[in-house]
Length: 337
Ligand SMILES: [Zn+2]
Ligand SMILES: [Zn+2]
Image (cartoon, rainbow, N blue to C red; front, side, top):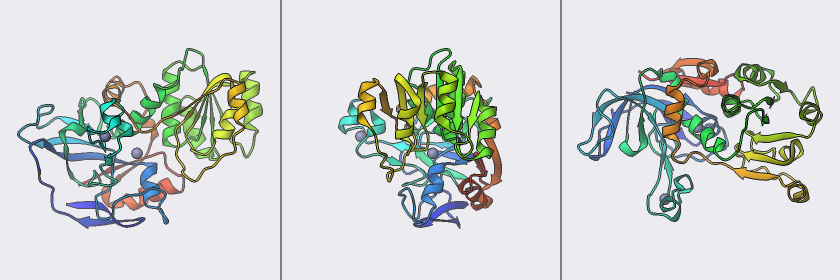
């Protein structure tokens, strides 16, 4: 089978691989119907890479497919079921796993980053990592399960109420999903901020009531004008705008830090956080949020179809990665054959 393999640090190669076989009774074999390219994939394939990975493995951590084989002890799915994959593997015995905070597991790994993933026609994974989803959800929409799980984890940490004002910094795939999620949760004023007009166009379609390009307009004065006191909630999907988030949020408001950039060292005036009673929360991947994701997708609550900008056969994966890198894509969906 033709697979997208992390050839060496920062580069992807299409390689011929054997179709994988089950190696334990609790595994399943998935015929991959669709797979996504995520921002993390672009970081992995950068030179120097902005995210670690294991060379020689099949990339792709967002994928959906049909079960074609089940190990003897598998109970949660049958052959023919459509499933989405939770790409994170956890140990089950560390402090965090045993406390129900598996996303903070000390020994976690990721399918499609450190172990063979879904940029291939077949993938073998543990039955613990799959979630059945109705066939009424198309494969390309189901590809959003993994990024949406991260959004649901973040949404559970903030309190969006009817009419809330929300500023979303960054209008890439995560920014778009947060825009749709806060809209669906009743936010009244949704202000999306990005340097790319292309991305801001999608933000409008996702439900933004206002979009701002900081190169053309001052974000803080617009947010002040629209909300009078500052936003109830600011969500940083960029990963380096903590200081700006503090400037945009109202007293008593909430800041959610979603994006990750380990090199960002923003200057924070700690005084403002204490004096203004600002709540700051970080959020990382997802924790037992796949059942909510499946319900959200099956209920068709969001316009995910509208975020798909590219549909490509797997052998054109490089084109998809390039479009993401240039900021000329929101979601790229790959179809392995
Ligand atoms: Zn991802
Ligand atoms: Zn653990």
